[in-house]
Length: 272
Ligand SMILES: [Zn+2]
Ligand SMILES: [Zn+2]
Image 1 (tube, rainbow, N blue to C red):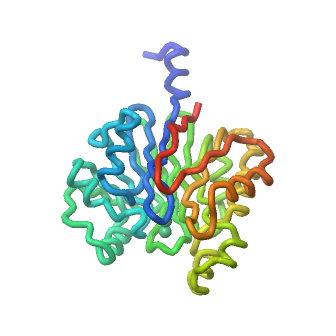
Image 2 (cartoon, helix red, strand yellow; image 1 turned 180 degrees about the vertical axis):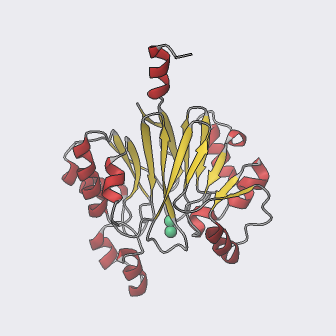
């Protein structure tokens, strides 16, 4: 039996909503909801913080379908064990990430663990999550594209550098959480030791405001990108107003910009 055209169309234009519950080196966690599926990307904030910030938007953390971990750094995985045990949430993680994170921080006993590889396609109901490998200095880091119907949301942080294919990925999206980690002048003049400055701006570190802005600028040529939320801003080497100023200078009002903050959740951001 074929579906009436209007029903088929409703399915095709399914929207995606997302909330950054927190972003930055003090802990990362992004909630994404599409077609009845609820996902958390990373578990770098406490279970209580995640539970309360979701509850403020009427979401119950116990109804999350999967917690998907990007890489082994503590700001992304520190509380994954608690998320899994306290709320009974399935954990999706690569074997190398799990091994490296277990050696570094105590995740405790994990029961409901599903392994994926950093180039896999994960399916939750009708929602597809594409994991894409990054050159960041985690052992086996991934970024993610969430696809529901014809809509695509990027969860792109801890990127390393603007690697081959990244601009193409961003231009294929309807909205994106994009790392905009540091202002080069603030990093150069700031208090970090030289090895750390070199790590951050090196090929396995983070993206600067300018690099992120140029990526977004290229992506807007596809006329697909509805908004961008700047994420993983450094506390020492960046701030929301400098990041926004750099992006606005490059993007000149082409798309709405939001900032994922270090200590509180964003509004619900929706792809229409
Ligand atoms: Zn990070
Ligand atoms: Zn990292």
